[in-house]
Length: 232
Length: 232
Image 1 (tube, chains in turn red, purple):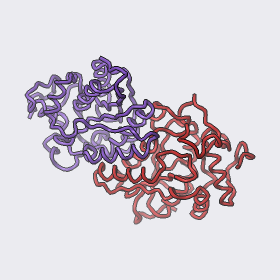
Image 2 (spheres, helix red, strand yellow; image 1 turned 90 degrees about the vertical axis):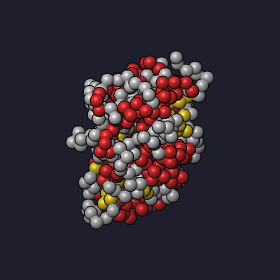
Image 3 (cartoon, one colour; image 1 turned 180 degrees about the horizontal axis):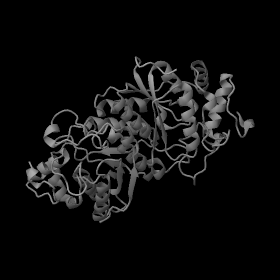
Image 4 (tube, one colour; image 1 turned 90 degrees about the horizontal axis):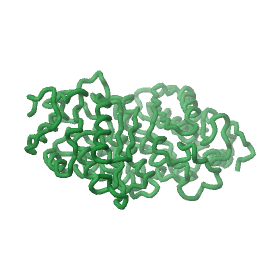
């Protein structure tokens, strides 16, 4: 299962959600992959770490790095890292302004770790499963953000040659489901829920986007939900 | 001493070295400042934390954040974070290629934390004491890098309006010493040495650049050195 070393090296950011898992399956297909997971004191941290390990096992990714980011929780300002703020239900947030689940400038922290690791591994590529359409409206999920970050890498690294790839950024979530099924993404091991760790809640915006994606793709979401009837 | 709240807010990255301390003194003069210190498992971590606290006290900066970054040490690849690699003496490195004290893509980690905090504090500015001339030749100390990072902020934050300021980037180190003396930077509390925590070694590239800067400025460096005769 492991990619041969004749392929170029890539670092893939793998949270354990559906998008990053499809990205990891693409990385296995196209590159010699290394998987990176970052815990940042988010509500479902432990469950996401478990998903990361299981997905790496299934996909045969042996080179892994799990690190902790203390800054995002210390800084707060998001319902994902501040227990005093409630995770809203989906219909309150999708399609509106930047929601309270936005973690300020989070993806720059993740990309920085990925690029540092890529520089030491002499990898050519960093892959991230950012999605613009059908997403929660976070500013750091837009193509222009990744174009700008590539320029930061070009000017701020030793060799300047690492590039960020965002293979899913222009896709609908339902297309991502179909692509994942094609490339063998282990959806049964993924975790998307923002608010619970035992069973996915089915009502936060992340669950709602996922359920709608499977429905629109005409596919069955293989994970159980606490509130199965909440599928849109 | 504390700036009044009518001034715009700024987050200043304060390692505790001479450049960042001059930056902090400028932040006190021009802004309502908040000081950020990041430990990343570098050799002189504890000594730098002590310098940070003392400098904030002296400058009257009350809003402070000290955070830990575990990723850079886990990734390694630098003599500053990997005890198996030796910190070279100055004459081996200054003016040559990117030296082994370069921490891969480090400043992107620091700026990411600063921008996240600035977003939550609703600050307008992030200040960093990066210096291009007379420096160790790190790629993430060049003006084009900061221009690119400003574009990442514009595209990847909620309001898009935070800007990075690098007031020292075009200065010679001797000019920075003179500026620091003018604005009351507490050089006696600063720590620049890369390799020791008791007394500055006087021979690593950071010590050598500092000693030369004070000499060229016609000023006395107020901190003691283990090898005082090593001043260039």
